[in-house]
Image 1: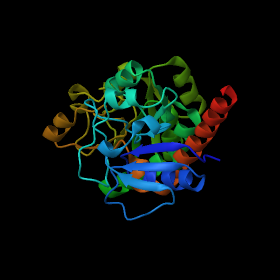
Image 2: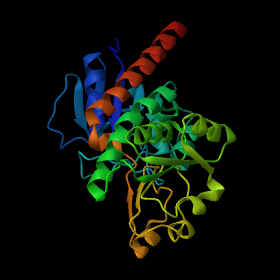
Image 3: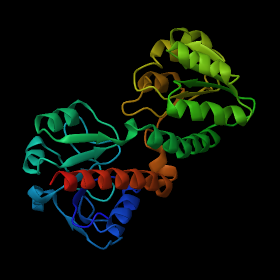
Length: 299
C-alpha cells in the first residue's frame, strides 16, 4: 500500500515502534534516525545518522509527538546523539515532502513555512486526541494512586480545561466517585460541564475553587496554576499537569511551598506506548495513503 514511499522517522519514544512496524508492513522504505540503540529490526527499515540521509529522496518525515524543541532538537530515547532538524534539511526534500508531528512550536512552524513544506499536526485531529485521552487518563489514575494516601472516591478533584483530555478526565474521575469541579473559559464548556452533572466555574474564579482541593489536574498549556493560586491550596494537594512543556503550573513555587506538582505531558508514551503508538500508526497510514493517491492522480 505504501510501496516505494521513502520515510524518515526522526527520534521519538516507544510509541514510534508501532508506527515503524505498521509502515514497514505496508511496504514503505524507512530511514531510522536516532535509533542506534533500538534492539528491534524491521523489514525495509535502516538505522542511519541524519548526516547520512539523502533527503532529496524523502517523501515524508515523521517527528515525535512533541515535534522539536525551540532550537530544533528532536528527542529520542534510543540514542545519545543530538539530533537537530533544520530548515536547510527541509529545503533538500522534494516539494511534496510532508512533515508529521504531534504538536508544533514557533521554531517548527517557522522552518516548515520557510521551506514551503506541509506540516501535519496529528493532535489537531479530534480522533487522535480523543483516542489518546484514554491512556492519558489511565496514567493520571496511576500517578494519583502512587502519590496520595487517600482514595480517589470522595476526593475533591479540580480539572482545568474541558478540551478532549479534560472531558475524558472529568468523566472518569466522576465515575470513580470523586467530587469533580471543572474550570473553563468558554460559556459553552461551562454549559457542557453542567450538563454532565459536574460543578463548573470560570477560570477567573480559580483561586476561590481550589481552597479545599485534594487533586488538581491541569490540561491547559498556559500558566494558570500560578503562585497566587498555589498559595491558596491545602498542603496535601497533588497537582498533575499534562500540558505540553513547560506546563501550566508554577512548579518552582509549588516546590517552595511543599506541594507536590508533577509535569507529565507524554503519559500515553509512558503507560501504554503500544496502544498510543497504534493510534498514531493508524492515522499516519491513512494520511499517507491519501497523500500518495492524490500525488498519483496528479501525475
